Image (tube, rainbow, N blue to C red; front, side):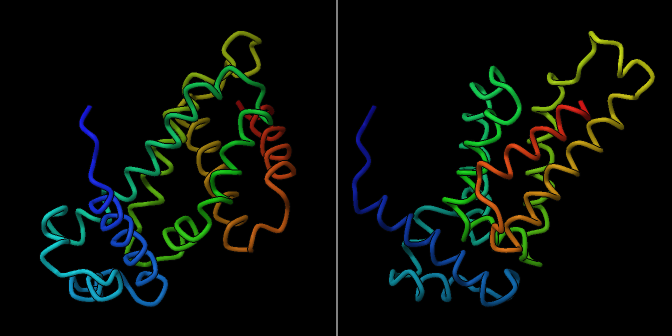
Length: 181
C-alpha cells in the first residue's frame, strides 16, 4: 500500500475541521468553498483536488465516522450490551465536536438518518428470537423502537454536555436494549 503524503493528510484534516467549525457557526447551506478554504488556511483549489464540492467533503467526513463505528461493531457484538456499548460512548465522547455539530446542525439532517440506519442494521442480529419473548412482535417495530431510542439517547447525552460518564450511560442503555431486543 502506498504511503499517503503527510501534507495531503494535513490538508484533508484541516478541511474537515474547518467544515465542522463553520457548521457550528452557520447553516451548512450558507457555507461556501471559500469559507472552508479560509478557515482551513488553504487555497480553494486544494479542496477541489480532494473533493467534488462541499457536499462531497461532508459526505466523506460522515462516512469516515460511520465506518469507524461499523468497525467497532464487528467485535462489539460478541460482548454483553453494556460492555459492547462502552467503546461507542467513548468514541462519541472523543469526537464530541463532530457529533454535537452533526446532531445540532440544520444543514446535516441526513446524518441522524445515516446513524439510525447504521444502528438498526446492527440491531437486526441482536433480536432475541429464541426465548419466545418477542414472538408476537414485528421485527420492523422492534428495530424502529430500539434504533430511535438509542439514537435519541445519544442525541440527548451529547446535546446536554454528556451529563454522565460513558461507563454510566453505556450501562443504562445496555440494560434498556437488553430488555427491548
